[in-house]
Each structure stands twice: as structure tokens, then as C-alpha cells.
Image (cartoon, rainbow, N blue to C red; front, side, top):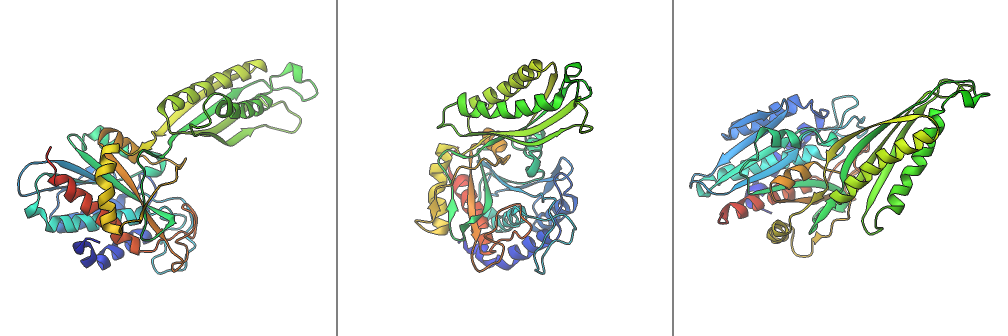
Length: 389
């Protein structure tokens, strides 16, 4: 544990509880951004907005120019009702921090406070990236389009992990999280009475065949050793039990670790939808929205960071991260600025809810993880700023 972080433990916990009590949905984090600006301003760290609710704080070392390091935390909450009976439960009906972003934000503010105290001994620059909209893949791209990350040499982020015990950190040499794409397929047919299907074009039947056919793309067109997923979560169709459906809508997601596989599958989804639709005299219209690429740790940065993690949590407590088909748009930052993403254990039997899955109504953390996360931010920044460019 970094000693300056240990000194500020209560400060970091109080911040986390404030953010937990005042959650805001993706791209609507106005009060969150204002509180972040308030805290950084009190430290004497200048800030500016990136988009409407993103915040960039910049700390320049007083020993002159040097490397530029980016430390990132996401800030958005989820449309979930908080069911915890704790004093810091959400005060916003139907909205809660069920993925630990409140903890990420508080930990990065704690790190900023510690690093500010060390600015006389620092060369170079630290960018504190408080990113909105991670849950929908909207926030990281704002910082890239803004130019806020230009010239950065290293990037680092953390994510709390409820199925990992407090005191452990998971981090991989290579891939950790999958890419995320959202697709919508609209099938256009023609109505008729169900007793005369030949007079219509059954969009519902075509859609059902498309859903079935999509699963073969994963099972037959790629290597079994290359993880990928096509998940269909929505199929809407029909106007009446005795009417041939004239419209159908399919919505789903593609998850991959390889850019080549990602491109192949998305292309084949479109080909499959159009081909199957044509068999039944219907047409298919396909839209694809990209949320984020796969999150892959840079090998060189991993080698630099692993000893820092063990410095904070001790040898033997850096463990392998299980591959996740969930996405995180920190991947977009790391694609431009070499970096790593560390998953900080936040679960324990002592804190009810801290072992529950993310995105669930009772989700909580063991707050001992906060000083670990903040220390990781500090140690990584200090190490990289001391390296020669």
C-alpha cells in the first residue's frame, strides 16, 4: 500500500459512498462530473470538460517535461434499483452503481490527491481521465476525438471484481475482455391470413430461421480455440394469432477477441440474414453498432506493471484473469496509448453483496479494495514518469 494512500483511506471511502449514493446514468453524469471537478480544483489540479460529462484533470510535474501518463476511471451507473439496506445506498430511484464505477472514480481521485503531494519530485504529466458512458461504449471515443490523449506514452485503468477476493489483482499478458457489437435485423414481409400463407411473406418464420442459422456461424466458420459469441436477446413480431407477420425485428450482440473474427462474423450475419430472408420471399435490413474492440494488454506494459502490482498486494496475489465476453471501452484508449487494465478483487464474506455478480441489485464492494486500486494508480504513474522517453 502506498503510504500517502493509506493516510487518505477515509477520504477515499467517503468519496466512494457519496458517488454510490448519487449515481447517474451513462452520458448523464452531470453531478458526478461537477463533484470530480470540485475535488480536483480543491487540490489545485486544473480540469476541463470532454463532451458534456467527461472530465480531464492534468497534473504537471515541477521538474520539467517528460513522459505523459493517462490514468482512467469510468463514472456511469446502471438502470437498476438498489436493494441494499446501507446508509450509502442509492438516493436515485431505479439507478445504482452496480458495477463499481463509483469505486474507480473515488480511487482515482485518491490517487490524484497523493500524486499532487509529490509534484515537486515529478517530471512529465499525468492525465486523470474520468470517463462517462462506459456501459454503452460511448465515453472513451470522446477523449480520443477531443485529442485529450495525444502524446500519451502509457495508460492504466482498474476495475473492481466481485468474484475475486480483496487482496488479489487479476491481470493478463494479452486479452482480457471481448469486443462488443450490437446488431439489429429488420425483416420485411407481407401480411395474409394464416390459412393462405402463400399469399403473404412470413417475416416471423424467416426471423426464426435466421436466429437458428446465426448459431452455426460461431460453430462452423471459426476455430474452436478462438472464443466468440453471437447472442440474440430480442425477437419481436406479429400482429395477431391468425395473421402472417409482415415485420420482425431481431437484436443481438457479437463478442470476439480477434479483430479478424469480429469482421468475419459481422459480415456473415448480414449475408445470412439476407440469404435466409430471400428464401421466404422477405427482405432483411441490417444495422451494426460497434461499442468497443477487444481489450488486450500490451505485452511490454504488462511486464512493467506486474512487479508494481506485486509491490502493492504482495507476491502470489497477482493472478490470471479469466477471459470475459463482457466488454470495456478502456480498450479504445489502450489501442491508441499502450497500457494495461487491472482487475482488483473487491469481494469478501465480511461484506454482504460484495460477492454478488456485477449488474445485480444487491451489488457492493469490500471497501478495502479502494486503497489497493488507488495505490496501483499511484505506483504505475510514478514508475512510468521516471522512465526515459
